[in-house]
Amino acid sequence: MSTATVARETVQRWLDEAGAAMGGDPGRRRDALLELETTIWERLDERTDGEPTDADVNFVLAALGEPTEVGSSCLPAAPLVPAHQTRTFVLHVAIVFTVHFLLVVGATLANAPFGPAPLRVAPIADSGNVLELIGRMFVTLVFDVGLVLVAYVSLRRVQRMVRFPHADIAVRPKRWRCYQTAAFFALVLVVFNSFRDRLFAMYVTTDNGIVGYPLTGAGLLANIALLNIWLVAAIAREVFYGTLGERRVTLILDVVARGAGLYVLLRIVATRELIDLGSVRELLGPQVEAIGGFLNATFGLIALIAAAMMAAALVRRVFRLALIRG
Amino acid sequence: MSTLFDKIGAELRRGLVQVVALSLLRERMYGYQLVKVLATAGLETEEGTLYPLLRRLETRGLLVSEWDTGGSRPRKYYRLSDEGVAALPRLKEVWHNISSAVGRILNANPADLTEAQTS
Picture 1 (cartoon, rainbow over the protein chains, first blue to last red):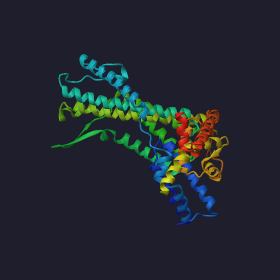
Picture 2 (cartoon, one colour):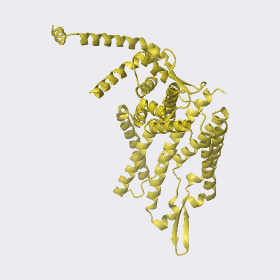
Picture 3 (cartoon, one colour):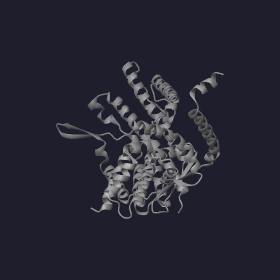
């Protein structure tokens, strides 16, 4: 192995350690790491005429300090909710929870789904059961805390992007990583379309052999075409990034892919019917509905977090698209 | 003991490097260039101190940054924002006040200062 390769590997290891200790989002981490990397190589260039030796690299890295310390001081991990916003955060959770709670009460009294379309909530099945009420309120509270948290984090990210649209650097992504991601999406596309019914199913061993019960919910079935568009656009985006780097056409594809993804995720959040346990009701008993509700609420929350991240990434790409030269 | 001096020294430097960096960044500079300029001027500053500080000043809107990818290595250049340009004279004034007050205190006899306060 050549001296230059060893030096590059040592520097990369140091950077990986520093990066692991950094907080912030991937974009800011990449930015901070690139700045550190440039500094390291400039120091090495100053110290050596030709290829840096092991001793040169070790000297420069030692002068910079412990990678974990440098990383954590360069980009400290930011709390999801900054200390000065804790009181408003609690207040906002309380407001959202109160509204949510009133909707559940309304639905239970009316014994039918209640509230406007995306906020519609189901009634509590047995209004006399205190344990069920407490369980439902707990799930509601967890969901609401997550909801407000997502709103806070997304708002902060969007704010930062609006304030510092130039902060991101147009770095040519690593080609092999783009193709790797494209291959992964292609695999997901094939597996999802070929084995969907078998993937979203529960298998039970009976006297007649293994029987599969389909669990695909209406929310998922209604979004299959869009999911495919999302995946195909994402594959094309990765291939373009790998081949051309960041160009207008790549960013347009990126915006299309993330736009489709965001739309799918928002529809899933609105319906919250990814899985349907109706087919196993007889097998597992009536409590399966509560389990199904809990799972769909959890998936809904995950989809909401993913949607917020997708929206933030989409805004970033739109900015890049507006700013890119050539 | 030297560690204690190092720590106190680093804390002292951290505060004043903000004003110094803002003053230097009236001209566009990248991080390592700033480290070298500061070292030449006698103010050794580690990257681990300077980079977070530059990021904080940028977050506060006093600096703006841009990547220059034209050279052999990409460099992140910083310079004062309009807000930073407006804030610099006031920060300098604050610094001069602190500096002269600290000078007076360090050179004075503590008894004289206590006396002046009671009279």
